[in-house]
Image (cartoon, rainbow, N blue to C red; front, top):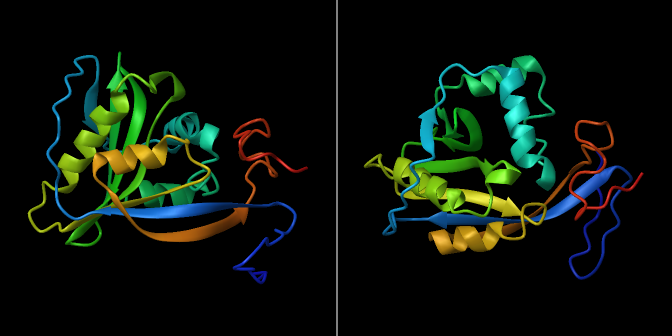
Length: 202
């Protein structure tokens, strides 16, 4: 694994084929008061056995604009192991019989829950579905009496509205880090036209 020296007071050039984002880690230490949101057009469904192809398709629809690649770089065996892990809980936001959003919780630790993935397909964004889904996420996390912490991270590759959305939801930032990874557009895991806010460098 190659290493580069990070300049903490200036610019650091990345090797070819790499992308970098600034990551903000946020946590919620108690359940906030949630404003009820009625969405009769949406249902939340707990996913049972998940088909890898169907999962990748939804993951890509939700995350392609924001350069999500974490699950796309997994081979079938790795993805199947993740999807069947008993400490991972998967929920779909469903509209007209089709998934339009995803919510994934990691409950591996007894006293905390991680929001691993959260998002909507582009056509479902902007009409309150995100707030509806987050209410469910918070309620699911704190439905366990032993849970003292619900946390997540977002980055500068995500939607520009994401960080403020999480802050308004009641999360508080506690750490910042830098993530460097292979650009998934380079090996065509994602199309080169996606995530134009992170320009592709051929």
